[in-house]
Image (cartoon, rainbow, N blue to C red; front, top):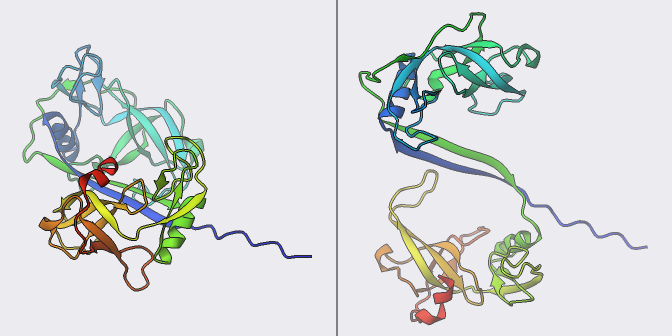
Length: 320
């Protein structure tokens, strides 16, 4: 009786994608966010007379630019909701709360925010709520700390507002972040394990015979499984590149530096990597490069010139 083979290790790794997006504000969004700082909620009236909160800059029906600002109430009615029993980091409240759509008094559309409630049994469609303002306000949607239950009747109606405030907010930084756990499949696992051995392994399509690096498990052209492993490189050719002039957060690389698409020898798909060992302004299409591994590294730290003559354009033009 033979022992059963142990299943292969399932690889997992926590990944974070962050992108702080900086944008300037037009007159409508500037007035809306500055108003929140001053405890004033502004909407915009469309060409059909609908009051939209949050305001938009163009009519969703006619696509015409709209600028008629109006002030609405700080109280409103819940139109729908969902309970969040396990708040995540950076959400409006640290304790369980409800996500709600609230139609503020005087508005015709609803705004999404958090409702501080004792539990899901305390929330219902049609309940009256009011804004709880943040103690410190800077001109952001977080100036509304959350909504809270309110017993008062609907009262406020939309009234005209010129949108003028002292020291108006003219730009914001929107922090986008996604935390997730990545688990590669069979093809990616083989690729990652090979990199740890300073080898680059791709997979060949049995139909069109293209070699994909990194492997995808299936040919995107033929739609068939790619099961035949092929070792490629280690050297390759720069097919195209870009010069990076903005330093990335948590990346200890001095700018400017170059990221390039590199077609490894024997591969039919270019992968990307950083180019080092050469001044950034000397990197060029056709440059022959090879990987550089740091001690204990599980993937190439960067690619450097091999010293070979540049590759002829016809040799890599299909991989650009």
